[in-house]
Image (cartoon, rainbow, N blue to C red; front, side, top):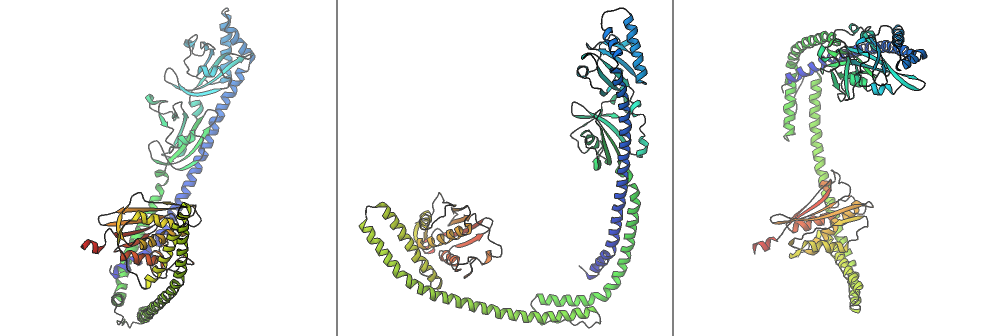
Length: 597
């Protein structure tokens, strides 16, 4: 990327970001203020309308309770049900007139007998007819007021108040009072919610749906038929019917348009109510602010282009020269120097670059000398270990021979004792392993010849397991199949022993598992040792097969190195990976000399 373009981008970012941030902050601050104001208005509207509707419902309920508690009215209804003269009709009509005067502006009043027959009604044609209200059986068995929003037989929506009439603890009938919806909802002023504002009231149906009962201005064929599934909980009327009375920022209306909403719930009737307004309307005033911000950013961009062109001409040449010097350094040429002689910060930068080159030359020289010292020290340590190992081997072998001979004497004296014979065999294998391990240390300095003999890898693994003490908490899973290879069985047993002991040490005192797998590809045998111990750190993995490197406090750092040397003398390789920890050994099925033969 050209310097001029970079300078343009830098200036553009430095100048535009603050203005952009201020604009964004201002935009969201105004949005937050408008949102809070709108939600407060919606909540106030909900509370006001909830109070008005509740007061109206309570008003009618109190009068209905008043009627149902007047003994003379109840007695007249009770007497009317008995066979009698026409005077009973006159009395029941007088009762109906009293009820009309108490209730007020009711659309219709009916008194229903327990058997469902209309005893009297302001609608004369319904007298002595069977009532058709589906909840009649439920109402006549209750002395509580029931309020419902229904359609009449003529298809008109009405609000129905009903209550069972009880005299001397016996149900004698039910009173129905129907009101026009305007008498409950007539005072609602939706215009206060703005152009896109909506006020909705709904009730929950037996089919678990929200049935809209307000607004009243609905198409005639959809009156009390428009429903919303209660599963659509991103719609505010559903939240209202769940009695979640709150304000909401991220809901939608039934047309999936984003809205702000406030909800309420009228417990007396089980109605949910919502006041909402479209976000597009309340945030329309912010669009002008966005246009101003775009104009300012465009003007600044033009100014930045002009300034960047002027500045790039005085800065680009020296920087380009220093870039060329840096390229020479990356190619390994430390003889190059920057030759800028300006009187500004670029000259300081040029001198710093030259000082860096000189420091880099000194550092490379020091690192080379340090690496030589490390190699010398490591060689000395290996030489010392070799001498020490030779001395230890000499001191250990003679006692081992004595122990081995003593064990053989015990074997000859107890040829029939199976337990002694088994333990002697086990001891012999341990002695052989110790001898072999001592020789492996010596082999690191002066490797012995590898003897390639056909053998069973499974038997070598089983023999190794006999010489290793497995903790009770560690489970070892052996392979089920076997592979025959040409190898030095003793050296391979030493490798397996080393890896298994490392796995046991890694698992520690916790419950763990070691899984050994045998696999075969075309010409190679593959042995995997997986353990459930902790993962090996990433910075340790590359060093794990280096001489004298160990993560154990008492480790020599030669165990895995010897394993690596043994596997390589077999023409194979050993690797390790973490998560989970798996040591993978790959050796040829046949030795190279055997293949040629």
